[in-house]
Image (cartoon, rainbow, N blue to C red):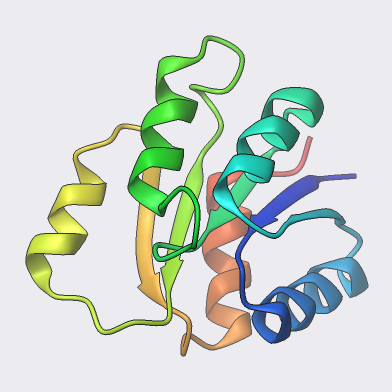
Length: 124
């Protein structure tokens, strides 16, 4: 069974994505902010992380960089999903981090998100 960590301060988005992937057989852990997300990532070592960009304590780029700098979490693929409008420069900033594998909008269809997750964290 695959383990996913969702780091996002938006409860509606977290719940929707968590329910969708739980129905597909994933074990989904939730972190409500970047600080909690970093602690959970190190503790549970998920197969994939979905991370928001704008969060109240530690933003997405800092989360990704912290994960990248830790031997225990650097290989975990991160899919960045943002609810705010983003331009090409923001996307490029995130893509410079080797653990950031995708950057997309929260308006993405869940079936498309599922395909991306499955490609980044194949079945064990």
